[in-house]
Structures are given as C-alpha cells and as structure tokens.
Amino acid sequence: MHLRENEPLAPFTTLGVGGPARWFVEAVSEEEIVEAAEWARGRGVNLFVLGGGSNLVIADAGFDGLVLQIALRGVFTAGQDADGRQTYQVAAGEDWDKFVARSVVHHCAGIECLAGIPGTVGGTPVQNVGAYGQEVASVIACVRAYDREAGAFVEMSAEECGFSYRTSRFNTTDRERFIVTRVDYRLRPGGAPTLRYADVERAIEAEHLDRAPTLAEVGGVVRRIRRSKGMLLVAGDPDCCSAGSFFKNPILTEERFEEIASSGNSVPPRFPAGKGAASEGKVKIPAAWLIEQAGFKKGYALGAAGISSRHTLALVNRGGAKTAEVLALAEKIRAAVEERFGIRLEMEPVLVGF
Image 1 (cartoon, one colour):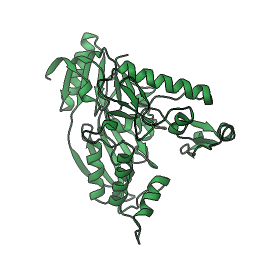
Image 2 (tube, rainbow, N blue to C red):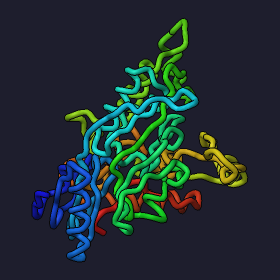
Image 3 (cartoon, rainbow, N blue to C red):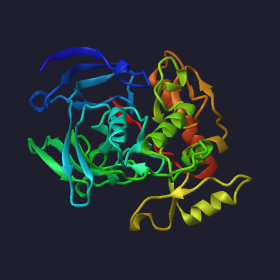
C-alpha cells in the first residue's frame, strides 16, 4: 500500500471542486483494500471510498481522513444461467461506460440505455444507477464487497442489496460499512433493447429504420441524447464540469401530482415510480420541470457556479468555483421549489468532508 499525503481531490471528480485528502491510497487488489481499511481502523481515521468521482461534492476543506481509490480491474465471463442469461463478473474499478460498450458488442441486452454514464462499476450498485427506463438493480446478480464490520469479504444477492430508486443498503442503512470490489451482472444474449422513454423513442423514430433497432443503435442514441444535455463527458465542454443530475426526481402520490397539475398552466411529465407494492399509487416527476417552474432557467449563474446551459438538472463549475458556491446555488434552488410546490428536492451527489 503506497500512502500519499495531502492529495488534491478536485482532479478526481467531474465537478472539479473541493480540497485535499489528508491521506490517499490507490488499491489495485483486494489485499490492499483490507490493508487500507485496517490502517484507518487502527488509527481511528475516517475512511472514504472513491470510485470514478462522477457523483461527488468534496468540501472546500477536503477530507480529514483516508481516501481509498478503488482501482481493481478485470472483466470475466462466467457462463449462462438456466434462463440463458450471460453472467459478467466485473471488477469495481472498471470504467462503467466501457463495460456497457463491451456488452453491446457482445449483443447482450440489459444496460444499453445506461450508456454514457460516467464513473466506475463499483458505484453502480451503491446508487442503483439508472436512466432511460433501465436500472442496474434489474440485472445485478451478486455484489462482492469487503464488510468492514465483520472484517471479511461477503457476496450479496440483488435481494440482499436493498435496491430502490437511486438507493441501496450501501448508501442508506449500511452506509460506509461495505467496500464493493466486484459486481456480477446477468445480461440477455440476443435480447431486444429497452424502449421506454419518449426521448429515446423519438430519436429512434428519427432514424427512419425499417426494422427494430439494435442494441448498438439504442446505445448510440442514448449517448447523443446525453451529449445534447451536457451529461456526456467531453473534454473542453464547460457543461461537463458537473456531478450529473444534482437532484433526484421526486416520487409523489397520485393525489399530490393532480394538485400540482391543476395549480398552474403547465402539467408536469410523469413516469412510473418503480416496481412493487411500495410504488403503487405513486408517480415520479422530473426535478428539472420543478426547477424551471420555480424560476430557474438553463445557464443561470451564481458566482462561479451555475446551471448547465443544456440541462436544468445539472449544476456546473463555471471555472474556479468553490464548493460553497455550488451548495449555495443548490440551496437557493431547493428553497424556491419548496416555496412554490411544497416539495423539498433531495440532492443526488454524495457529500464528502462535511
């Protein structure tokens, strides 16, 4: 384990703000993960696990503890199950978008609509990453992780992960307990692509195909949509200096949705709240719609922080921003939405060092 001190963290994040880590280590093996965890435990030092840095807001003061960057690599094919689904065992440090591209090349369906999402594989079960009608909870077979409480590695089924909308046991009830080292995905060879979101359907229709679209075509469309919204990492694009979607899309009861729909001149778009009994009688609406209705437009600026010029849901670092400026803008937006609709938006990025 090679320990570094006072390592700047902003370069490790897509938002590009925040101070240094008191200690920093890059782990390329499970043994180094155990060593780092025990080092922190033995010294009473706080430990933060860093993946791709695409969903983080680091405090201006940095993190007064050990930041452990997961750099485990490897993608292995583990055969098919009884239903014919192909299992891929993917190390937590692998680039997520590259794995999506690989699955599409192999004609395996299940994550093609998650193309273009930045970050690493290890972060996907933590946030239950989802977009355009898909989420990883539906294809995860197993998560291997180091249990810091037990001091041992465990393997958990999807049911044991406690997946819900943008959440899991890893970022709720068992936050900071587990360090994900590998994720197993079950994908369907030769399966049809998912076409559930209007944006994707319209883009496919514009292709004027005389046949059903391929996985590669749907993945390409998703990437183009993400780029048009500033949600695809492109070097030199100022709208890419963000943490992605800064607020979660709120889930409301049908009654509350009808109240909002009848309270103004514009009716919010609506989407299914999810699967299962817990989602019955509920609907999900876009946080971006709420933000715009509360008076904030694309390109709005507050100091060196601002709203993306292409997507209201992304807060950006316009150049040299401090974390305090980004959070001041976020709070201003939340207060306006709460005053207008009585809804308190929940931030999606992980706050580190606060």
